[in-house]
Length: 406
Image 1 (cartoon, rainbow, N blue to C red):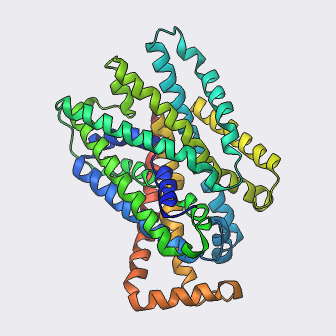
Image 2: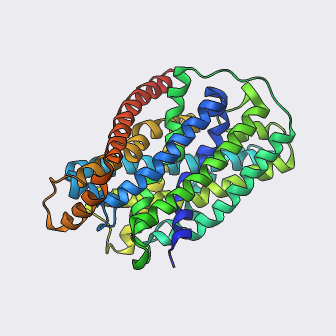
Image 3: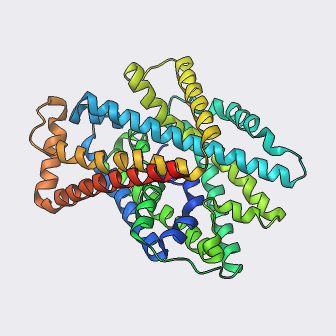
């Protein structure tokens, strides 16, 4: 049964991804104190906005449908395009990392010219995971998500232990406004799971389908993600110092040990098993843009949508200069809008008296009863939405300028 634990696993796996590889770089870039503050802010944001999203759409089954009922069809298309961008970018980053790590491991294990087969390896991986991406129900992604989550926890602990026992590296620099601004997209992306909220929420057992259930699941997922990011980021940044790479596994590959390459290859498996979870919301958004939704859609069309998105992810992975470019652009262009701005707007709009649709009347009344006694909740959400708009805009301009100069 899809209960609290399964929901927490799905949300946590949505948060944990290739972003964890760039955490040590973020810690060296903006300093440990600032990095922990950023992670704490976006962990709290994930909990608050997941709950707000569930309250705003208690009677619906998707993020897009909630946006359409509350903000209209144009905003729904904007959201669907953002989820499509964010999750396709996530799949591209996962495939890019899986291909690079596999090539590095194969080269270490005496396969000459392994890098010349990188494209073929990524295509082979896509073919291998394709059957898992065409599931009609979100719970179909639970098994690969659980396996990859357990592997991710084990590898994170291994990285932390190796880093702690390895001593301290060169001293890192202090944070600057530019470094903090550059770290915002990655911090937001690290807790990006809004596109998994409604698929998770809609598959709760009927007796558990309440916004408080998704709030508990989001709190569990955010707390575990915060601890893993903090442990890996702080310990590895302390060990490698200013020599920390944007992909921390590159530092471990330089050690040229069999154990390091076992970790490297294991992480490529984690990346592959994370693709079905990220592709599911992207396929739903694609179907919303093309056909108005995927409910009741024939399996052959679901498979066609998955195939199109996998091809797009492969193309992005092939042409992106580095994983950090993908994460920064996705985080600044999409994750802040989807995870911070829109959920707050939805909650504020749905709890106002302007909704007259009979379908939403019960939801609106319930929201007004819960929000009016605590007006500070509305002010907090308003401040978070405004901060998200300002930070997202500034971060996007900064990220694009940096990407253009590389």
